Length: 181
Image (cartoon, rainbow, N blue to C red; front, side, top):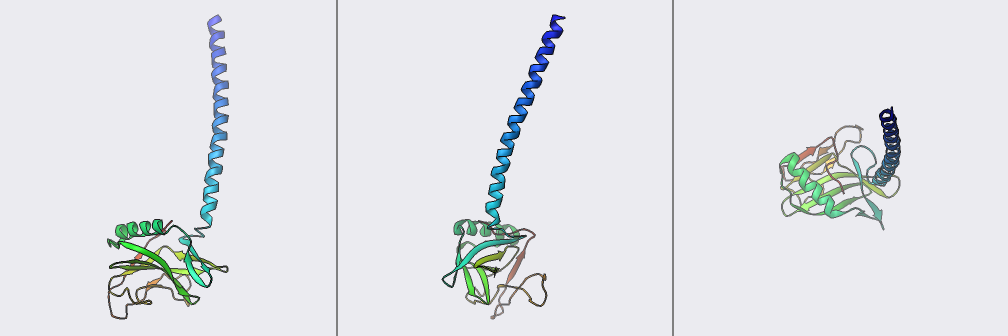
């Protein structure tokens, strides 16, 4: 009988200890969840919906990249190589354009890539990270081999504008954003 009482007492202690540790785990998990939620909320400023990434703002009438350029270059260099087999070796990134339209341009010594950029109601600029155009044949052309969308066909996929010199232009698409900070 004494052994049964000792075992019962031991079981009660184990059960109480188990509940106590579970409740402290829950509070720790909820703290982790709160931290994750805060991180997600801070990313909302960068990623609006789908594959659109906030890349910049209009400051003093000029488009300016607001994120980490080095991280942006690393993400695109890596993803372009994986998805299209092109080693871009991009060393610079900037936003080109006016109120008529913008492009996020990646420049290297040989290649140039572009992503379509739109301006929202405020001064924020968002890049469509799921379609890019890359060339080594006409990187000096501001309107050659850049991502365009037909305004008359909302929701239609983007296309690459042709190089004026007839050069090659490679379109790369993905179901995820190929660029990130």
